[in-house]
Length: 307
Ligand code: CP
Ligand code: NVA
Image (tube, rainbow, N blue to C red; front, side, top):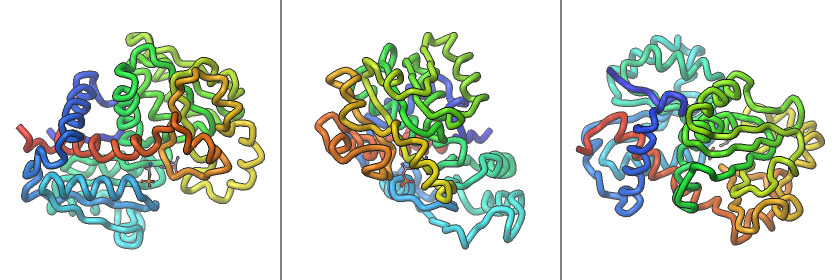
């Protein structure tokens, strides 16, 4: 049966370990599994812009010997030109996998339902699983462990924050979230994560004050205040999120060795200052690089060809 990658929730601990170990090998030698996707074609259907996700997937597919096809919003607009079911069934006759970046998470679930080939969530309004998986790989690489590491997320409780909730709870990390009231992460996902955390020992806590969220933290993570699709709210959000900026004063409350993360693109001067983003503690570009290695590992997990 085909396997999709829609949410980190669906990955077992064993699968996370397999992806990490493949990614480590791929990071040492980018062409290690060249040929694993020989004769295979993967489409990227993107309804929102992308630098990292698109380029790292396209490059990764090419390094595995496969063929990547990019379909921009005007090419395939699920539910507009034709139904999601018809698109998914048709594409399943040509392709070996679909990577989808879209708005509503229900669109990802519907494509996954009708496609007979693996579907990878390349970001929806609710989740960004490739990002969060790559982020915990990066933290593990830098700190040598995940269990007992304290990660603090400050800003908007968005798709990245939601996915980090799954990533942290599954791997036993401590996760402190600081958001303005009414901008917290998805309630159902918080409940899910708290349930998962009971088994793994992860500690999850939510705050409406950035200072409490970052105190003694090992890693501080932030993301844009207005995600793609929320651009019209940017001005209003700028007022609401002001005190959640990751700046020198906030960083000083964490451990001196604190690592600074951002999934990028960053709005420098808003959610993060230049000074912090360009500081020696910042690992944002290592984080961006690891998207390539992790996504190749995800493709290998779903499509095989490397054994
Ligand atoms: N972090 C991330 O997904 O970046 P892009 O939107 O550029 O793909
Ligand atoms: N939360 C951001 C992530 C971009 C990679 C967005 O959805 O726009």
